Length: 193
Image: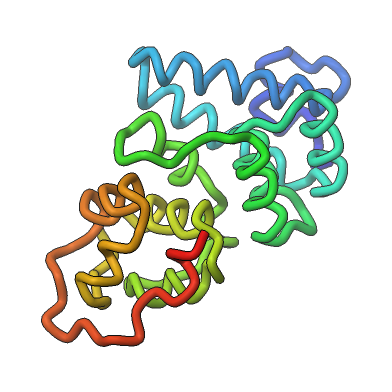
C-alpha cells in the first residue's frame, strides 16, 4: 500500500498504523448509506472517491476475499474495480452476487458511476455496450448507467422492447435522442439473460 499517511483514511485517523481493508469497506458503505438518505451528497461522493482511490494499492484478490467473507455488497464490487489486478468479469460477478439492482434513479445508478473509469469501456453506442456486456444484464445496465447522457440508441425498437422493463427505463434515462441509423444487428444475447 502507498504511504499510509498520504491516504485520506490515514489523515482521518491521525496516523494510526495502516487501515484495515474492513475499515475502508465500512467507510465506503457508511458514506453510501448517508448518500442514500440525501445528506451531504457532494461530500459523500468526494470522500467515497478518495477511499476508492486508496484501493488502487490493494490487490484485487485481497479485497475480494474480504468482501466475500463479509457478504457481497454492490460497494464491495465497486471497490474491487479500483483494486490492482482486477478485470471487469470479477466486478460483474461480485455485483451479481450482491443482488443490487441497477434502476433508473440516483440511488441505484450511483454505484455504476463510481466504478473505476480506467477499467470501463469507452463507447457511446448502445449496440457496442450490448456486445461488450456479452449477455450479462448487470454489465449492460452498469455500463449504460456509467455512460449516462453519452450513449445513443443505435438499435431497433424491437430489440429495446425485448429488454427487461428496468433496463428499458435505464436506457431511456441515460441516452441521447435515438439515432436514425439504428441497424438490425441489435442486442444479440443481452436480452437472453
